Length: 139
Image (cartoon, rainbow, N blue to C red; front, side, top):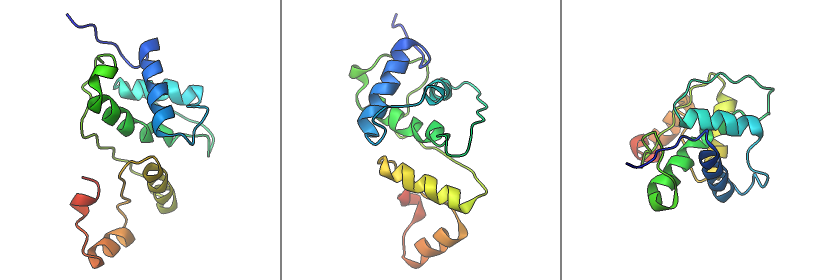
């Protein structure tokens, strides 16, 4: 029987830290403690309510999950077996009412190598005019 761990255990937290430092070198100190605790809960499919100050790093809570899943799925032998299903083609959906915030989030995600698209009226019109199929933008 294969022992499966969760992301909130020390081995899961170490995996999270290793992958974040590899894929997001701009964060040379890694994740903040509240981010690490929160992201590990999200990856373990636990419910979470996080309230912090503006600019404190809440965007990382949803931005990091996609590269974590991608890295583990592409290098399964290098990581422990997790108790949740690791997705080979993870998708994150972020809903916000503030256009400038969603554009900043997309820009940040793309700087991490994550394909992203802000589904706004302006962006839909621009992609349509450019002849770009939105299905292939984030697929």
